[in-house]
Image (cartoon, rainbow, N blue to C red; front, side, top):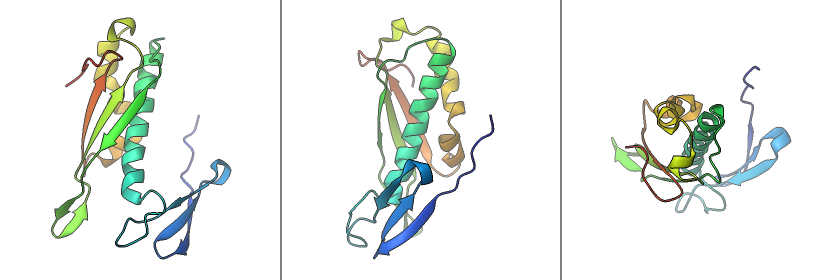
Length: 147
């Protein structure tokens, strides 16, 4: 199976608001936050953080399912604070929490999963050279499974 090429169209609507066309997956509107834009949609920084968390969650599910496990209802939270670097705002770090929908004891080969799942995440591994990405995995009981 070949990896699909990335082909997304952005069209300026007004000010800093864009319509993003994902082709068969539809459209969405993005906008910079005030004072630059009007905050009428997620901004590029939010989309970047979302892409990292989404990719990590999918990679975790893939790694668990590879060993015939059931991750349950997975959910994620990502946070980060833009910082000034050489006078310009930059995203220097993101903290991603991945929450499994099952207790750790019910997931076979979990230690092995935790050792390898981040390597499956194309987005995180692509941005890590410039952004520190801290990943925490918790089971359904709130137990931290990695450090």
